[in-house]
Structures are given as structure tokens and as C-alpha cells.
Image (cartoon, rainbow, N blue to C red):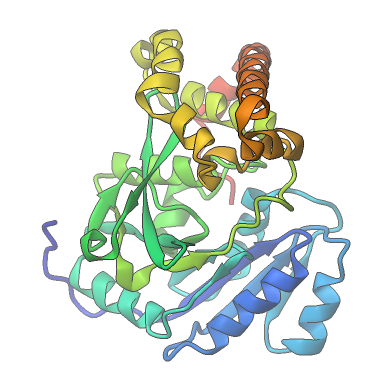
Length: 333
């Protein structure tokens, strides 16, 4: 990847972590940040209406961390916007509460890369443990707005461009984020980072992942609530809001081709967490059982997906005037 020479950069970094009922995982995340060789200048946690005592844990165990508490659950996008408004750093490092920064030089690596490459809009990356192997994730956006995760070995995971950098680990310049308008708070489940990556590419900048800046995503699929319908509604809205009319007209074709061309069915059968994380727990368990139960599970997943897909299109067509208005909206900060 071409990286033009860049001058000195302002090193101040604000780490921003929204959290909803992940007190234990949040503690592990914060501890990993405090072990870094070069730590953020400030860490801002937004407790998004948690009921598990996350705020009390932060006050007692991490008194230097800046805490914002939402009285009710607003979603990760709105929570991040609240933190951006008070963040003092020139760089904003967005993290999810279920990540662990295992590399003690992660933030230092980000600084080195960003100093050398001024055309990077967003930088980050994630990996997961598969037995003894660590596989790194590179994100693509299918023409229907669905995201596809490609698993890549560590030796190939160096300065790779992607369609977007997930906000579970994404550093971006504050001035750029403000100029792009921040995060659309309507995206309560997924799609907000996908839209940020899309806008960054529209601004002729690059989304980059690298093993030196990647974090461990400790995703607990079993405890994750089912939010498949919300995720589909959001990604259909993302398409209506951002894509061209020609791309929108071709959506029925893209929806059909996604199922087969993306290998999504195989990913579900392999129990890949990226493919099953939005599914109801009962269906995930059926797929894990194998045999006839797996077949019934796949049929049930297909029917549920189709039902949610139709529901999502009806909902977004009803909300189309508001979505069209949001296309011209300047920002959310």
C-alpha cells in the first residue's frame, strides 16, 4: 500500500469504550489498556444503561477513567457520539468492551503507522483464537450491505486495506470523524462502523488493518442476545442511505447471490461466530448438534432470515422519507 511521507502528528489519544451489561469483560479490557507500553491520554467509558454494576465497578477499581452513564440504553453509536463530544485527544481509539489488547505495543504500533501514512483514515484489526491458531479478520461489504469476514493468517495480515475497520478496534483522527459527522445513532446494532468506513473511502482515504495494531475479540456468542432482525434492518437502511439508485434497484439480485456467493451457509454449518452471532440461542444450539437437528436448524434459520429480510424492507420503505433526509444530514455531533 502506498504511504506518502507524513510529518509529526499530535500523539494525544482518547480511548472510547461503550459498554452494556459486560462488567466482567469490561474489567479485562481496561486492565489490558493499563498494561500498554504507551497508554491513551484518557480513557472514556460510556455505561449505556447497564444493570450489572458496571459503573460501580469503574468508580471503585478504575477511578482515573472518565465515566459517562446513559440513564437508558441508547446504543453504541449514540454512546460513542457522547464520548466524542468531550474527548480531548486528537485521535479517537474506539474499542468494544469485549476486546483485550494483548499486544503491549499496540498503540505504539498505531502511532508509527499513522505517522508514516497520512492517507489512512481508520486503522485497527481484530483476531480470534481457533485452537492453537490465531486468525485475523479482514472486513468486506457485499453489495447488499452485508459484511463478510475473511480469515487471514498473521504473516499476511500487514497493512491490508479493507472496506471498513470495525469499531471494536478502530483509531481515527478526531477532526476527520467530526468532519464526517460522527455516528448515526439510528444504528443501534451494527452498521455504524460500516458506514464510517464507507465515508472514509468516499473521502479518498484508506481503511487499514495490521497485525501490529490488532486486538483479541473475546466475543461470547452464547451470552449475546439475539438481534438478527435489528442487524438486517440496519444494513438495509445503510444501503438506502448511502448507495446509488442503480445499486438499490439491483438489491433483490444481491440478496439472492449473497446467500450462495458469500459462503454464508457453509459458515453457519462451521459455527463460525461471525455467521451465527446474531442468531437466537436455540437455533445456534441446533446447528451445533449435527445430524437431523442441524438440518432442521438450517431450515429454520433460512425461514427466519427470509422473514426478517421481508420485514426489514417493509420497515425501511415506510421509513424511506426519513432515510432520504438523513442522506443530506450534515452530522450527529
